[in-house]
Length: 364
Ligand SMILES: O=[N+]([O-])c1ccc(O[C@@H]2O[C@H](CO)[C@@H](O[C@@H]3O[C@H](CO)[C@@H](O[C@@H]4O[C@H](CO)[C@@H](O)[C@H](O)[C@H]4O)[C@H](O)[C@H]3O)[C@H](O)[C@H]2O)cc1
Ligand SMILES: [Mg+2]
Image 1 (cartoon, rainbow, N blue to C red):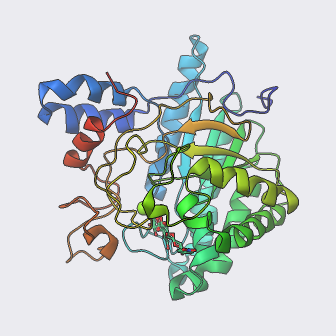
Image 2: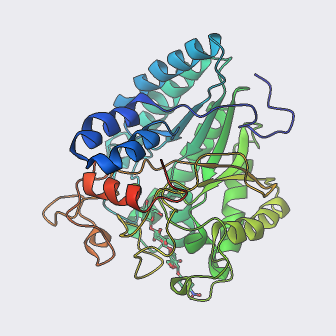
């Protein structure tokens, strides 16, 4: 599968409404929804979102989904696979809510290579004719830019860099395009952060020998910023890059200058309502007042942006509000956070209902 003529990895492709998320909606959500919200919920179940490979145990599902996509495409569909690679050792190093299974002190480096990335590569090799777009390791490099003062992050830094370069080299197939996670406007868009971020991302890109399959950067994963907003919300504290488009337009030339000709995709899964209930721009956990946002599309009105996509599946928690949990993070206890909330990644019905009510454009 050669890259599309335009170079846009999404050109001519349809998004795949993966069975994992649609079954959450049909079996977990719809039965207990008021009748008035059921049509909107089934509309959401049909939206293609990214499948999170957040444990080694989830990797076989990638094979299942790619086999289904291959079969549907043989019958005339034009589906692509979209997955999140998300299992670095010491994952989510500046927070607690999404800490992962791999630890540096428990063979995490080797396991990430041989039990995670290599296994993903083996599955991709079985489907050379299926287009696969990957979001690579949410939050990790962004934490390398702003959180080297956090012991867990500074210790993990060399592992994050080496293992990310390993992933980019190992997954560099003709039918694959990859987007490194670039945080969001409220994280790396600040003047203090955007320069160091461009240097770091280009360094990792070049450490991997500038793989053809590395198309660029995905922004706003699991976050809430507008792609394009006329008036900067007050919580953006005067940052000139107050939305994702301004961030991308500022970030791209800096990356290019460092030798990384990046294009972008933006997570619009939870951006439908502006402003949200954030009390501070750094609030990230189950933020009150969010709504499903722009449906996945290539129609972005910005040549740097290949597509708007739904990466974080709306309705899955960002983190537990249970203070006795080992993964309890204080951000999930803040006033801006919807409570009570279950563990990260598990179904959060009340939040899903809120996203439906606040969706824009309207869902059904
Ligand atoms: O006035 N000024 O000039 C000025 C200048 C600089 C300022 O400092 C900046 O302030 C920003 C906040 O405004 C900080 O951004 C936050 O950083 C957090 C990590 O530390 C991120 O949290 C992650 O969020 C992910 C989902 O997005 C979760 O999946 C993940 O678990 C979770 O850990 C927040 O999103 C992100 O908003 C910057 O670091 C900080 O450098 C502030 C003001
Ligand atoms: Mg998270």
